[in-house]
Every structure is written in C-alpha cells, then in structure tokens.
Image (cartoon, rainbow, N blue to C red):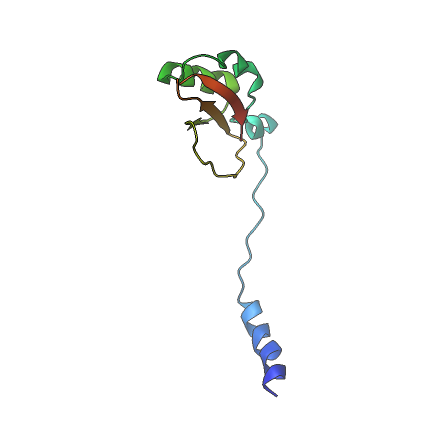
Length: 101
C-alpha cells in the first residue's frame, strides 16, 4: 500500500514546480556574437612573454571578454565559455598556447 501511495503523493508536488519563460533572443543578431572568442588573430603572441600588456593585446585581438592565464603544471576546469580566451605559458613565462573556451 505504501508503494502505491508514493506516486500519488508526488503528483501534487509536481504541480508546485515553477515555470519560467524562455530567454528572449537578442534583438540584434550581432549581440549574440559580442564577446565570442576567436583565438586565431592572437596566435602571433605565441612565444612572447606573458605580461599584462601581452594579455591585454590577446584579449583585444581575440574579441573575448575574459582572459584566463594558465601557469605551468596547473589544473584547469573543463567548463567551456565562448567569451573566454585561455593563455598557457611555461616556466620562463613564454606563451605556449592560446585557445578559446
């Protein structure tokens, strides 16, 4: 009898679940692309020193909104963000890789 009561009790709880409207699409299609990363234009910085000035140039050239530095032997989260550029460098602070995500 208890097993049959569980689905009956779950039904009223399901009715209390919230509903949210879908997010509106941008009115200007170009707005969706703003902040999207493209690492290709920044590849000229591979081999350069990882400095604040170089980071600012990479951020501007990639079109990303967020810059993430990757020190040697560091662990990174695997979350993918279209608005982020990743810059890895070695022990000599030379940039070894520039990617998006």
